[in-house]
Length: 174
Image (cartoon, rainbow, N blue to C red; front, top):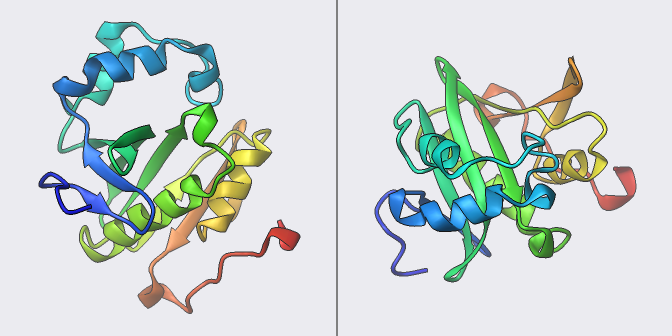
């Protein structure tokens, strides 16, 4: 995508751009939909909550991004630093964009950015342990389970210089 704004992250199939106040109406619409937030917070959010959390107001502590395929918005991702050279990411795609490979592809490009540009050695995610779809997506992106964390499963993806590269599992092994 040639016209990705500054701060954008370009992958093979999707790209990520910084979410801004300009995206508030779109994000508020998504976050008001119970299906969209079902596995991401679990409850619809008010416009004010969305503005405070997902339009870039928490930068640089939390970086909020829109996931795009071309110019079409597919979902939201964010990352937060949790310590020196590590942090966590969250991602949610619109229901119509799920199951098409956009999740693992987007996760891989975001992780690559965090390893190579941000200098992180370890990236974590914490899907609900009951959300098999999300766990499968994160595994396809190269994340490995670390252990339970309350009702969630803590998973990590380490940079290649922290040990041997880890291959993503095949569909049959998930």
